[in-house]
Image 1 (tube, rainbow, N blue to C red):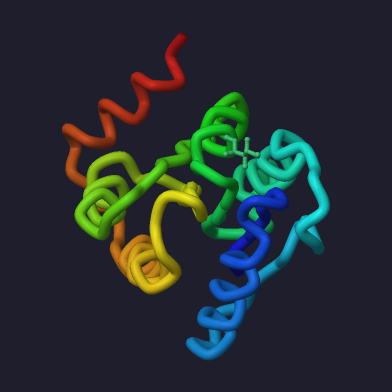
Image 2: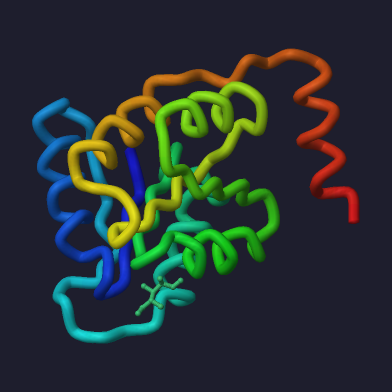
Length: 143
Ligand code: RB5
């Protein structure tokens, strides 16, 4: 199950991503927002963050205008590793090396075609499980 949420800046892209994932037979849990009416991104970021760290959802996707606010807010939650990606290389590497569990996207930065490719890359790329990466990920939380 993939958790997804957005603010008003990411609403249209969220709907496209949901449709795309549904076509791929991937279950999606939508945490809102449900319109283009202005809203505050942190509450959505936190809901998806907790959905992922609780184990309810395996991965999360957060979308705002830039993806920056969502990633900053989500990364405040323990064990969230939210990665803002603007291309497929970043999406692949952050799964392989950082075991990122949330993808942040900027709907005003990238087009919908690229966004869907980034989503596919993020979801389809497994963590490398290499000891050096496991060690570094462990170090992130040691603060
Ligand atoms: C909303 O206008 C905008 O600030 C938000 O979508 C996001 O880009 C914040 O980081």
